[in-house]
Length: 540
Image (cartoon, rainbow, N blue to C red; front, side, top):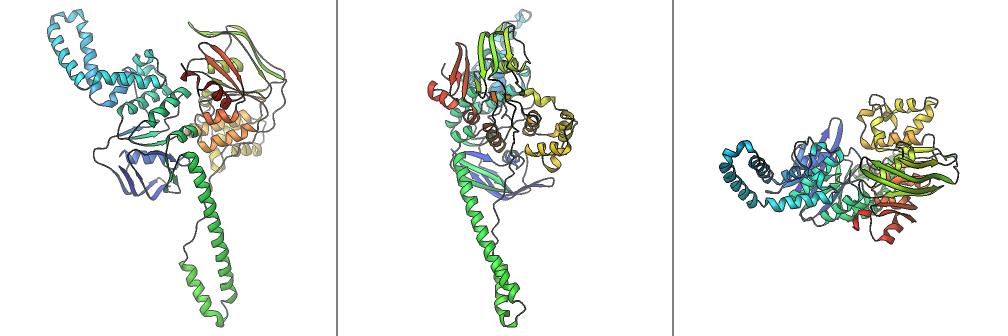
């Protein structure tokens, strides 16, 4: 269906692909993996024809329709979310817009003298709309938007009033409604809550075309893909199975390659030693010559490529008292919307609470109340003795000064710290060598998230409050963060839609539902086992 034959591609000084080949067949669900900057988005753009390879060929079978979802959704405004989604399905959206105009004209008293002509035109347009299966399409568009957690009000409201994250969902819904022959999804799991993520999972499992996607959500990948294509060192390597199986296969092949490399190196060393020893002796000249020729012919085994790994090191945090946070009879409303009425909640030392609930249930509000960035309308929020808090908020990344370099941002935050310790801190969070001279405005979402974490953990807190800390992190960085946090001895309160992160780090669950608040001892895995659902919004 889609073939990449010996493609080569260079961006500036960076070589992305060298004579790389891969094929995608109908019905395959493929995960595209590789380190940040390896060329995943470039590959998508080449398949869609937005970029051309420098050499080689990208071929797509005749008549194959491609739907491409990228993080750059473009401008959206002036139409409802439903109309925007239906737009992806071709001319039907234009006919729907025409219908709406004619409906408005029929209700306009100033156009009463044109009414006969308007009604006649309306009948024709309506017939066209029915022929295009417009009514069923609108129903399907609403179904997809509901799956992605849109309320009826948001579906019919102006798409321009939505935040960037919600516009992403509209762009994703447009592709899903299209049902193209091939779907290219670049990080579709970003900006989704857990309920939407699980709905999308089910949708993609039922999709019959070819699916090529990237995602930093390990669990999401594992449940959908049946094949992995890896970009590494300019080549494309295919592995059968899901992400977990790929990791195992990769580890085995790396081990084999390393052993092969070491055997060859030992053999080469032995041959070179013989040549060096006897090259001056005429009696051994023929043997030496033959071995030199043999060495020239040997195809060298490359050692396995070492991936850059980041290790987060947490300094031990000072010990807090047993009672870390106490919320008593807390009431909180935004306008007419009541979030909490008489909330009582206690956090004790070394507890790791994950907060779960549908959009609007009050997850971020709870974190804001605990951190003091929001005040309760009634009731009290009190921190215990010797509590030192670190707060990772979504908006924290927007507060970085774009003109400062990474190092200047750390210097500004910690003027008393020595250069050596700040460079060591930057290195722990993946900013080595020249990376510390990058300006904050050019950093990727993942790099900004790492910088904010570095600032938060320089002087370690004993209470960590984290609002979607993994949102922009790639899988490797996420794994490092999980490893570091699992060794952290302080207390945690966090919100995340990453099931791997939830399962690895929580030992308590606070569930926010319209019926009330439920507390569960044991972590996320026990919560799923006890309730029979992975997210609160799924059992309604």
